[in-house]
Length: 433
Ligand code: SAH
Ligand code: F3S
Image (cartoon, rainbow, N blue to C red):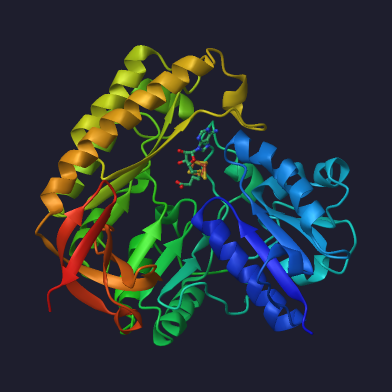
């Protein structure tokens, strides 16, 4: 009987890809197979997120649960950003954990499983040239890392302290990986990094300088690639050249993530975001003008230290003006190692909650208005998964989730679909070709 792994992945798309990398290494080098359940696993991995405090608290109760449920002799490994951030402390607080593997040390997975109580969390470890084995959760969509770490020092964010400084992965490796994925059926390529449009500033060896815009062009030249998505870009680096390529390259999906964080220029400065409210509005307006059908998503933090009612009104003003198709909104969570944790003017819990509720309620109203605009329209939908009740699901070019009646025969195909039913984020349609 082969050994079995069970993996739980929390947090962002980069963690999803890190989990795929670990699975590839374990299956190809150590002969592991996927377990059906936690109870039958020989190796349990928790790939953690530490961007906000809550999931970090939950981690320890979860380790407790897993320890009770696991079969005797099964190992537990804590991986990802919380592993980088807490390191050794995890072993002290949770003695049932067998090893701790940081977000920048993923390639050492096959080593740490054999070293009891191993802690590998160096944040200057360079994996940018490591050739991971192949494993993809989806046959139709391929996540590809284009950089590791993040060079921005947003004053609220722990990521630079868990994933280290930014290093770009050489373009030839990215293109090679994209080509291989597309040739094996993943016609949608999803490029990943903490700050993708800062690509190409630093490589670990000698490599010709290259911008993210150049990289997008190079990936789009691969014949089998039909669609390109990416996350996350930074509003500061949304120059005209980038926005123009986004607008005119037919393979680049017309959905853009523009993480606003705050609409107040004063707060943006204290967050060290490097742009102002006006710059953001002007970039968003240009995007809407050049790509009329674009969907814009964003991340917003409310209750950042020093945020006054007036600052929050600035955020609401940007929300009104840009009319985001999707908002991921969060109450500020103080994080260790970040400058903002020591800032004066920490906003009381109840004020933060009230602002968050108001923002979300207003956005829900806007989503209700938008859903009417989609009814009866035809979108090109790339089908990538099956849903219960005899349905297949996929996304329109501008990222709306669409379900139709159908099965396997639709997967991996892009078809025109007319929307017949809509809700805030989902849609039901019929194939019209
Ligand atoms: N570069 C990544 C950022 C990862 S963190 C990206 O742009 O996706 C993802 C989001 O979490 C951030 O955009 C921010 O909105 C939110 N976030 C980060 N730190 C936070 C904190 N301390 N409190 C609340 N939200 C935070
Ligand atoms: Fe965090 Fe800012 Fe980088 S949000 S991941 S420090 S761009």
